[in-house]
Image (cartoon, rainbow, N blue to C red; front, side, top):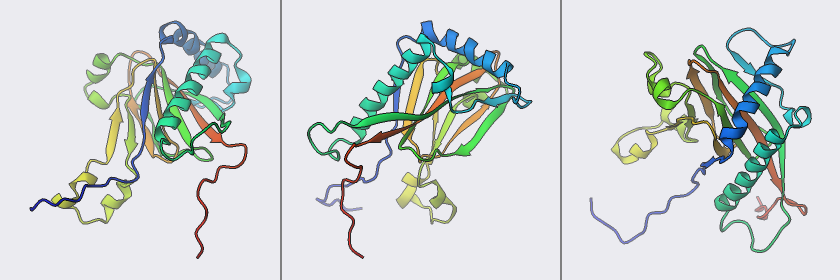
Length: 230
């Protein structure tokens, strides 16, 4: 193939960020105990090895450890949203308002999983890992191996693989998933439209996460670009 002078342009990238909570060691144990107690005392808790709370933890939990986690999530969201929107947000200060529209926890074990899904009515979502077995211990599982408890993300181009002609010219489409190996204290932020899945997990300790949805609004309205005429 001959070279050309035109520079390659890559449009519509999907941002994803991982932040590390420095206070995880002192806070996660408290949160895990609280969440396990809430599950045990939930009269509507289903049987089985998967549990998801209602998304009203902002109203139900009033603990300094939980508030510290929320502050970390908010600060991380602000940083990531600024980076993702660099060159798109107009210059200056805009008084943007960040709101967590739902916060909940999930517990899984016994090879339970959360199937592919997206989150609605928000721009960003995230998962914070409260408790899970260490990586080497998880990966030693004879069936689940390296994917034990991982979070899998699917490329927005994933649906194209079903009907697209695939050859070496568009080989970049073929790597359509990203597997994030969980670590206690890690926070993964991603656009809410991005399909994802909690892979099957089996371990000595339950896999406990906090998930949330977030909106970032401008007081004067969120539209930056005028609608084009038909």
